[in-house]
Image 1 (cartoon, rainbow, N blue to C red):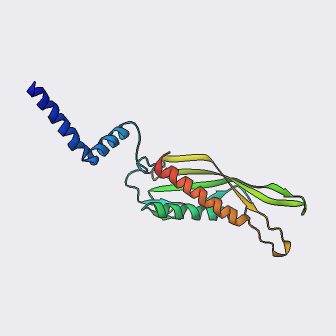
Image 2 (cartoon, helix red, strand yellow):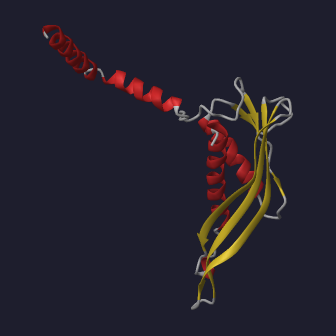
Image 3 (cartoon, rainbow, N blue to C red):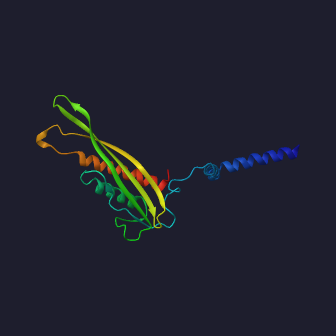
Length: 190
């Protein structure tokens, strides 16, 4: 009986000692989570290991909107440059490890609200649809999404003497949102 109590006492002391070290508990929990399919951000990247350069040529466009393709390309290059250590270039002829090509498929502007006093629309919605393909140097497709859809709302100026077109600002904000989502998709693999 004395042996049983001594063994029990040792187990209690062992449990108390292990509770003093929360790092052990954290290690056990993280091991359990990683075995369940969870992963850290950035560990499921669509970029192959050893990728150092990424070319992002100016997006193609099937619309007649002014400068949208350059705004979107610039936003994507800036986002990749800020979030990765890749050397990002707009030149696809420089023999990069990967190339990201994009095409703006549609860009529409639709009225959202109508001001009855002024008898015109007071806010608009810009909707943009794009297609993106990331390919490796050997031509293998690493990532593809043919249906990125982004929307951005903007208000119309009510005073016609100080009229300022707000749609370029909306397209700029939309380009930043698009770039954030695209880079997250490519880097995080979701």
